[in-house]
Length: 91
Image: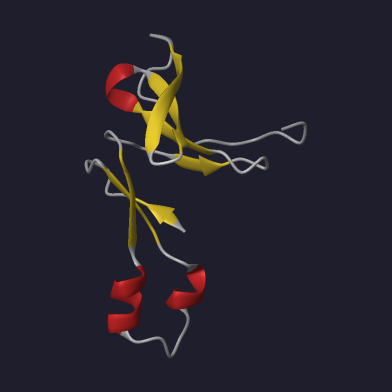
């Protein structure tokens, strides 16, 4: 599971197995990984191809996670405050 605070700039991940009942808070805390420094984001999307896309509402763009950093995919003023993602059946 990837996550970050709405106005935060750090992307984190945790194995979803650590979120199950019976796993201690200490084990959960130890399982949190810092993945990358990003930007303010309002949406995350893991595509069927395994690419994590991240909205960047403050500059009308979409980025993607590549290793431990993000790279731009698209910037367009028509993307006013990009938010939630979706993916069609054709990917």
